[in-house]
Length: 267
Length: 152
Image 1 (cartoon, each protein chain N blue to C red):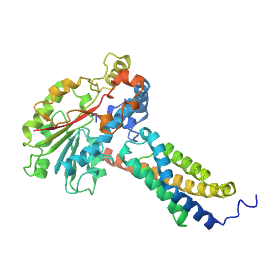
Image 2 (image 1 turned 30 degrees about the horizontal axis):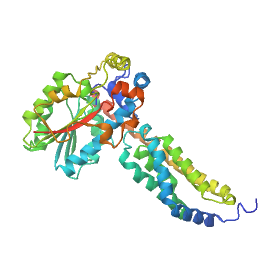
Image 3 (image 1 turned 180 degrees about the horizontal axis):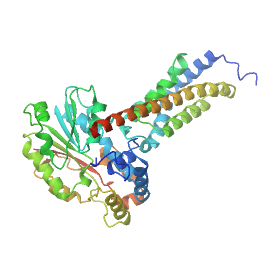
Image 4 (image 1 turned 90 degrees about the vertical axis):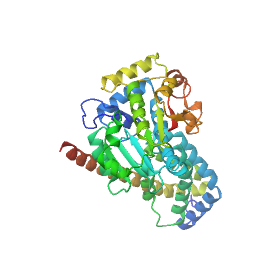
């Protein structure tokens, strides 16, 4: 989830555009207009966002029930709506959400009121140490550092340096056996395609530049985390779809895999 | 036209329920097909993995409506909205119900059946719209609270 302010309605926000692509209500006319511009040039983007978002609940049950993690720390969470992690975890699992935007954090606390073992803090994914060393978070964790981190739906808004620094910080903080679930957005898209260039321009104009990179670059940036046996899984395959979901133009822009991948990595 | 209304409402309900019960798998498959078609236009919380059970529940809801005079379609409409379906999906489900019953009924039962199905679908839409309104009010309140706290 892109990190910007939810209340400035005078200019499009990447976060609210994302919400618009997902069919949500937390967006303004200015976001819908900008979103429609993007949809016009890359119609598959709304599908790509959904493929990405749907994976969150799979991840939640996988981490909590199959892999046995009882602490999940999610960065750049956006609002903890009904399709988010805490809805699908085993009872007793601690979920710590975070988002850069103070209004999102306040709104989220309201949504989570009365929900046990689920917390929301304001924090920037670019400086994860600020979340991990917060006194409240340290108290919740009680010294536990074998955790599962989720970095999902945000990579396209981070520079290479920011991704590398964030995942390295998490690696150094975590105990062996910890997990990082990572979403490689916009991987291997055709950056020379006019539609992609125009999308980049639209996002740059909103003040939220996006950064495309190859899957190989993502692999390098994620070191020293180790991939599980599946490596990066394309999100079409993740949900049991095939490439028939993609039109000819989608393939030209996003590549035959749809441009989004997910992976489980371990320390 | 004398035969059209020959079945009493309760008899008609039971007859429709029996047809639905016998063809339940076919009906659920038709519901699933339209839900799959509209998958990407719903809210993101509607995931591919839940469609099968929603389609099955939809067939059960119709059966419950036909078998239980007090059953409210409004509650079903609310459930569908809260599950994340958009209005287009609701209308398509309604079309499937109507088409399915048309395919499985004799001509003389069609008119009263349509009346009955309209009652059911109006209730579903009413529940769906009420749920949208309720959600918007809750969200407005949350936004207001968040803005107040965020500013302070």
